[in-house]
Image (tube, rainbow, N blue to C red; front, side):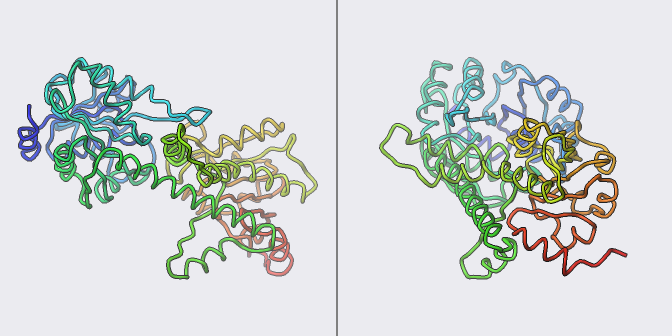
Length: 456
């Protein structure tokens, strides 16, 4: 099949699609194309996920507006089905790959899932099919990894037996459908004609601008945008550490800085998690690992953000010491285990780092998260007899929390706030000794001594 023929089929929504990997990226993408009338086949190696999808349920837990309803609709209409077997893709015109692309402990990309997907796809790939990689990958991965793997697996040649391009995902848990529909996309093609056809396909589901370019540019754009955010968060975290030391309030500082034209200081906090931001800077850096390029900002930002969960430990230590206690044998309530508020996504969770360190120091960690099954339950029940409560995630449930009720059930009401969920004065009025990221300890004492009025 030639590109012109595929273009006609895409315009008429007659192209048959397959999506490999039905997680946070692949599942909503598959549902969106099915909603628009395409016949979509999803492939995933997890049988439990395949069974759940085919029963009409979304495998994505957490607050995802519209996704469960959309899944039930498109699966019920038989526009989308899931399979475990790659052989079911023999008739697919377009294959979209949405598998994980992690880095290892040495920050080297590990494309085990990507290579596996390509190797299993190769023997069943239809002549003239279009393969699109949505996964975030290091620059030159399309040229140096994807293309040779696919040619070897298919025994076909690029732009003859198949076509290839990438359209890096731009989604965030909690906003999956909104991001797919409303966020600008960059399409890379091995040829300009391929990029044009990919853009034509995505215009069915993307209401925002779509820019066409080459594969390397698309790879760089995706890794740069997340690296940029990581660097900016690291800057905010360093400002927070400075404020704690010199007597400032980073949240007030941030508010006033952002009133200056062209400034947009991000929010500091207890750490950076998720699948993308802790990884993508290393993907970008890896693209020049064999070249004479001295990278300083990217590794430094990663170091700062990786440090923040340990800084939370320091705040816990200071908070406990202020009441004559210490971390060993303390009972500590950890509020939030996911990396993102109102989500069940716990990939690279800063809470996991915090808890591991505290348990190494012989603390008893009681974990609560309203979106993760293992840690659900009554927060107040879990807080019974705790020496300190640590807010690691700004879940809506925590922001609505009755602090006085929480204080009443704890052994010693010490609150360590890593997300500025509460201001020091509010916490102090509820009876808490408060320590928060970016706020100087003397500010706490001033609030408690001079500004606190009992809650009636």
